[in-house]
Length: 69
Image 1 (cartoon, rainbow, N blue to C red):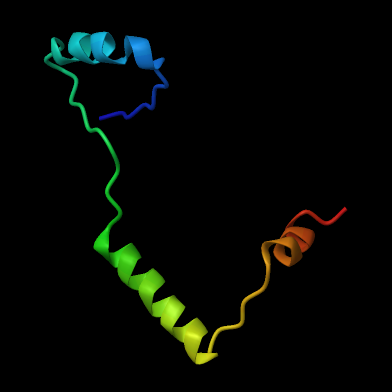
Image 2: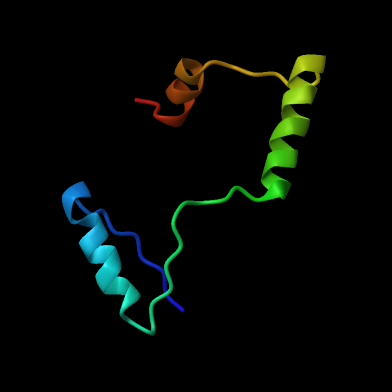
């Protein structure tokens, strides 16, 4: 199975969605659900940051390292 993402103008969205529903080989998923494992990982990391066990830095600092000029 292949997956694609489409950007549809708001005024054409419903008509396009109705068309897609007529195709028996297309499944439609609206929205995106964040897996529980990801939510748990973020929660654990935030707790470690609050305890002082993980150091953080600003986006500006990180950006300088990532995009060194």
